[in-house]
Structure formats: C-alpha cells, structure tokens
Length: 556
Image 1 (cartoon, rainbow, N blue to C red):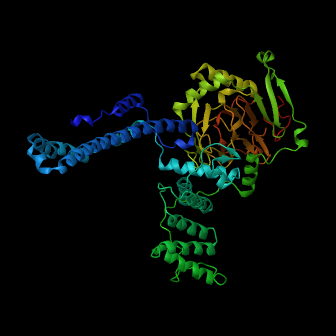
Image 2 (image 1 turned 90 degrees about the horizontal axis):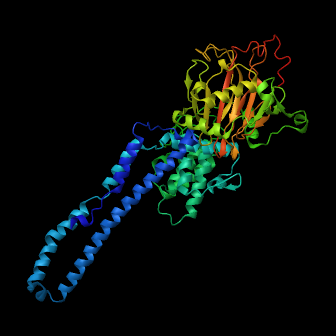
Image 3 (image 1 turned 30 degrees about the vertical axis):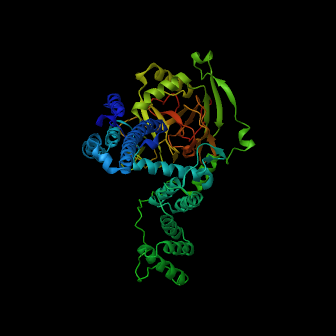
C-alpha cells in the first residue's frame, strides 16, 4: 500500500511546540556580541540536527521501499525468464505481471517523483522565524574576534587551527574548509595579513586531507586569494610565483593573466617607478572581483596598542617597588552598619587611587541580576563625541542591559553597598548596567568621563560629568578579559564577586586622563560585569571641590 512508505512527520509537532514556546519573542541577529546569546545557537543546532535525522530517515525509508520492490520484481522476472511461455500461460502469473506493470509500477513511479524531504525543508524555513539563527554579520564578527584574539595574545596560526589556545587544547581541530572561510572573511575586511596566514593554513590542511570530498574550495581559489593578498602586503615576487602556479591549473584565467603582466612589469620597473601602473600604462591596479568591505581606522595609536596588548598578555607588571606600598585591609568608611561586617579592600594603585573590594557582590545576587538582564540585552553602544548620539562600534563588542534600582530589593542592596564603598551619593548615579561580552569580547581604551570637547555628552541627564566608576566582576574568566589602564601599566583580572573603584575626575573637576582603560578580549570563558557610573551632582559635600587637581585625595 502507498501508506507503507509514507511516515508521519513528528518534526511538524516539534515545530508547532516551538512556535507556541517562542511566539512573541523577537529573533535578533548580532549573537556574536554576547556569549549568553551564543549559547542559544546550540539549541538551534540541536533542533536542526533532529530535523536532519528525520530527513535522512525518510529518504532511507523511501530507498528501502524501492529496493524491496526491485528485489521482488527481479525474483519474479528471473523465474519468468527460465520458461517465458510456461510463465505467461499461467493466468495467475499473467495477472500478476500485468498488475506489476500497471498499478504497482505506477506506485513506484509516483514514489520516485515524490520528494519526501519537502516537509523537513519547510520546517527549516519555519524554524528561522522562531529560533535564533546567526547572520552573515555574526560570521564576520566571530571571525574578526578570533583574529583579534590571535593578535592580542600572539597565538600561532597552526596552533589555533589545532584547537589550542595558549598551549591548552580546548576544542577539536579546524578543517581546511574552516581555515579557508576564516581567510576569506579576512579578505572581505581588507585584512590581507590574516588572509595570507589562514589561506596558507587552508592549503596545508587541504594537502593533509587528500580524501576529503566535502571541501568547498579548490587549490586555484586559495592561490587567487594568496597571490593578491601577498601583493597587497608588498611581496610582488611571491604574488607572481603564486599567479604562475594558478595559471598552471587554469591557463585561461583572465584576471590572473592580467595580474601576471602587471606583476612582471612592476618588478621590471620597480627601481624606476614610484607609482605602480598597470600593463596598459594607466593607474590600474591588479584586479580582484572577490568581495571586500571598507576597513575600520585604528582607534588608538601604536604605542598605546602595544602597551594594551602586553598588559592583556600579562607581560607588563608592576615592579616590586611599585607593589611594596600597596595594602589590603578591612574598612568601615565611618558607616555604623559596616562595623559588624567591614568591607575587604585591596589597593591596586595609589595615584590615581584604584581599589578592589572583595565579596562586593554575592553569588545569589549575581544570578538574579543576570536573570533579569538576559531578556533586555542589546548591543552595547558608545556616545558619539560630536552628535552625542549612542551608536554601536567595532571597538566595543558586548551586549548590555540597564536595571533600575527600584526594580528589586537585591539591586537596592547592591546600590547601597556601592554607596558604602565609595562614600558617594547614588541619586546622581546611572542605572546599573549589566554587560556580557561576546566572542573575543573587548572594549578598547577609553575614558569614562566626558572631555571638554564632548559638549553633548550626558545631554539630558543634567547630572554633570562622571565623577567615579564602580565595576563589579560577576564571573571568573578562564583566560583574558582583564581591565587594563594603559598609561599606568596596571591590570585588574576578573574575580567573581569583586568590584573595582576609581575616581574619573580630579578635585578641580578636570578629567584624570590616567584613568584611560580598556577591557581585554576574552580568550576563553565568559565575562559578566556590571557597573555604576556616578555623576558629580550631589557630591559637593561628600567630595568637595578644590582649585588644585588633587589634595588630600580620599583615603578609605
């Protein structure tokens, strides 16, 4: 019967349940900017795997049915071939032969034409409306993040491809396809340095995988990316060598033939020509029709970048002389309540004064705050110094949510504890910002306070400048994720439950440029933080102004 091979699709039921579960929940992109959202991608993958299993099972059932029919027909046909006259003279055999070639064969033909996978393909279309799927932007963001980690922590390309980060094996190896795609994403971003690194790795792995029939690229494609990127890196001789190798594989490759002439002419005239010209004497450069995006200008200078990356790697550390005067102690800050439960203070730097409070947030508080923040996460923004508008930036990769003090007693307790730690009035503080960093999540060097030229900063708040910052660490981070002060050569490494505190302004109201800081990329693990930015208004008697930059700076 025709129903023998038609299986009910249980995955339609799964889809219906998912729609009921997720109805009304917006499905957004930019999942790479917060690891909390990356976790949801595993749920998406699980559903897709189940759907694919159903698709394969339906296809196998179809093929098994057809194979059984074929075996049945072959047996009958073999019997008939022994003595055709005797076989067909039997009226039963004659009837069965006629039936096989009419209704039976029609059933087989209909099944051959029927696509049993249609329902499963339609499921995937529906899943895109109810599950979180990454976008092409997420792929590019994840690739850029991995390359950022490679640069910041000086990771060897082949080691990363083997799943090793700083000598620790974390994951399975990358395939040649994985390396090729990473090189391609680098090319799209005009990052020719990493294009060369990862295309070379893709080539090496391709040669190690001679029997891999799932590769999505060819040697010629790798050579094309490599040749042009090598040229852009300034090595014309190598670019010509690779182009010649490409032409051995594809002699009529139009773009490669044009580039070869350019490279040969450029090499011949390299000493005489100051400006590179194409073969026809125009200003034409070697051609590539591969997709390229506009590159992002550097955010900070090379000296600061070097200090930033060295601090992130733990290569710049305070000297014993600098560490010697730092102290740890219990403090009450003249608050009666703290006499029975004093705060645990650790000095991290004396001038400017930066301290770390231990046990500043408890596990139960952390879990509640994270639970409240997750549904509200949006891509973290920075303030445009000219327009005052909030906008996303590639130098800040994270998602954030804002929690009001009055929303929960736990937040009220944390805010009160912040007041106890700082001695400052919380009425002029911004809401508690909760942040989860994404893949290689980071925030490049920046000031928390507004500089004089930033006329529209904090417009509408009418609370003055940001006088102080309190940064709560809500998770341990396995590798990376430090808060570093680039001019002080100081680094604070995340420890769950601690809080860092520093003043952003001198006593005369001028910004303390020494507090310029950054969040290092998260190499492995996940980083959760929350912060309170405290403004000037209401602090007049708690931290009096002075005509001098600093005198008698607070000693807690």
